[in-house]
Length: 199
Image 1 (cartoon, helix red, strand yellow):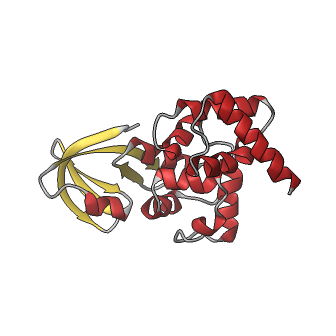
Image 2: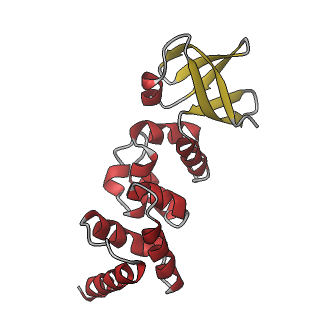
């Protein structure tokens, strides 16, 4: 398959960019907000791509960042979310924002995405909540925060599901409460979880 393409920008319109790759003009479907920010005519562009083979045609989807391509492929694996729906998601929200919405089960945010209703939002959460990788959770936390990743792994070893505990971890991190060692953060989270369960 075509992993990426590099060429000269020829034109852009709506959700489509035309890129000249060694004299061949490729029509590439992209999130419109990404196209607006792209280089002008004649400038060099590098796009990470996904080739969709349909019965009567081929469609090439392009993304500026690898993380966008990764999310696009994950979305294609969700029942009822086709390529158009996946592009709508990426046009509305960036990968970190989407991962956070899934991890915190923020249905209200998801239904703001064009074409995503309550049922689709619930399906996205249900099918993706346990598939968010450690690497993607690090993207949410805003850096290579290995201590948070270690805490999540420790919690999973104790029997907590990632989708079950992550909203609490996210909330505590946002409040600046997880600034200690792995052991200290683990104790804080377990204490907060215990209080949460007693409510």
